[in-house]
Every structure is written in structure tokens, then in C-alpha cells.
Image (tube, rainbow, N blue to C red; front, top):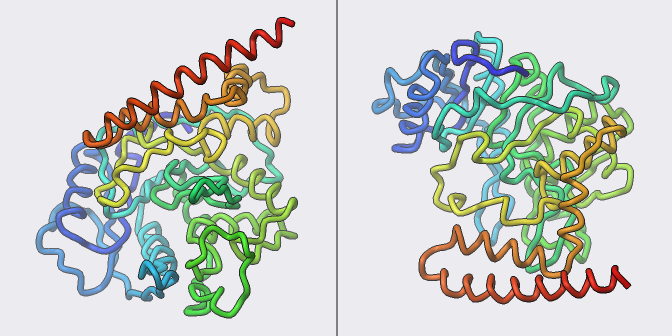
Length: 357
């Protein structure tokens, strides 16, 4: 995808109207993508009083509702809502490209127009779309971590925002609604693996996994991904191969898009190891493995050596937390960063000494 102009793009703002977030979202699009077509796809009977004139097309949908998937945290699964509002919003769009985003996100600049796929090779037999769809890095993960326990998560590409050809986004959202409450209360009747880190989650899988796995099944006809704990060697391969041939994942900074939701504002994927989520390094690794085995990726080899050095990952993590943490935690993070810096230096010196011998 080459750099596009704002008059070539339809922006689908999907989700419920909530003030002042939705107004800020629409205003930011008008500011940074002045010639874009804005489609607001929301629910019937929404109060639009404070946002009139901020969109070009309005799609009012019947709310399919949501079911609680986590009783402890009282969290709802909005999967069917995402499907309905996204499908109808994209259907109403008239431009070549579609940027589909949640109604609680805002543009900080016009970086979205500069996003480009510099992965030149893809396997046409494993590609569902004409061009790779661009996705957000927050929650585009290979592993989830809780209390230092790492759990593999397949087909987990963020559903916060997507950018691509209209026809590709239409195909991506060409998925059936799930049957409720069976989907969101799946593990109420099914037994879980004993080592699952998400003990209170009842859903069959997350919305991110549903979208990606259902589309993967259009290409990989033998795919059997029954639920989010169905981690097999075949499913790992299919997840990685489908994602790298059909998606590019970019960071929050590269997108120039951020969330207005307080619970997500402090999330920084860069704090984690780049081999945990779909960082540039992890995408390069899969690109070489599944798309172009002749690609020379020197920075990936160097990064892998750094992470293999004892204490490097802890040093990096605390350094980034020192930058992003609240003022009340600065001293604690400074102490941890300094401690791991010395540990890393001594470990690197020791390792170099052994290699010389």
C-alpha cells in the first residue's frame, strides 16, 4: 500500500455514542483527515445531539446485545455488536480505502496515511486479502502473561482499528454472528485446562481470536480451532502463517492513534519483550520463516542476542517503566533500573570472558 490521501479513505467510527469521547473521536478525524468520508455506525435511539455535522453518513443498527463472559469482573462480550456495526458501516462507505476504528479512539496526527507495507513478499496461497490489512499492536499478542506465567494465544490480532482496501475489510468482517449465550458462557459447561491463567473467563475465545481464526479457516480448510485453549502445533503454524501473510501490525506511535479509555491509557506494548507480541521484530521473524526465507534481517539477530543475555529483558522493562510510570513510582523504578543495569553489565562482561576462552 502506497501513501494514501484523505479523500481516498472512508473512516468507520464503530460503537456506542458516548460523550465526550465520540465527539473527540470525530473531531480528530476532521482535523487530521479533512477530506475523508466519515461513517458513524452506532445503535438505534442513540443521542446524536452533540455530534451533528461531524459525520457524513449515519448507519443506525439494531443492538444485538452482549453477554457477560467474566462474572468476577462483570465484563461483557461485545463481539456481535462489533460485527453488526462494522459490517453496516463498511457497507455504507464509498471510498477505496477503509479505516475502521472504535468510537473511543482519537487521531493525534495524520500518521495513518503514511503507514506502508514494506514486506514485499507474501504467499498467494495463504493470502485471503488483496493487500495486507493494517492492525494495532495493543493486544496483538502471541503470548499473554499473568503473574509471570506465559500462555500462548493464537489468532490474537487487535480489533481496535484496521486499515485496508474496502473490499478486504468487507471480506474480513464477512463472518457470522455467534450464538449467545453459548459462545460467551462456553466454559460454564466445558472443562478448562488446569494451567489456564484466565480462570474466570468463560468465553469460547476473544473477539480478536474469533475474527482472525474464522478468516484463517477460509484459507486453511483443515483448521480446527475450537476455543482459545486449543493450542496445537498445527494451529500455531496456521496462526503464524495466516497472520504474517494477511496483516501488518504497527505501534500506537506509528498509527498516531490513542485511546480515551482510562483503563487502557497506560498500556505500552513496548514494555514487553518484542517476542511476546506482534512487534516489528516478531513480524520480521515470521516473515523470514513463512514468506521469504532469503531475507537478511541483521537487526533481528542482534536483538535476539541481546535478549539471550541475562538481565537484559528486566533492564529494558524497568527502564521503560521508569519513563512511563506515575511520579509516585519513579524512585522505585529508578532503583530497579540501576540495579538491573549493573547486573546486565557484569553478566555481559562475564559472558564475553567465557567466549574469549
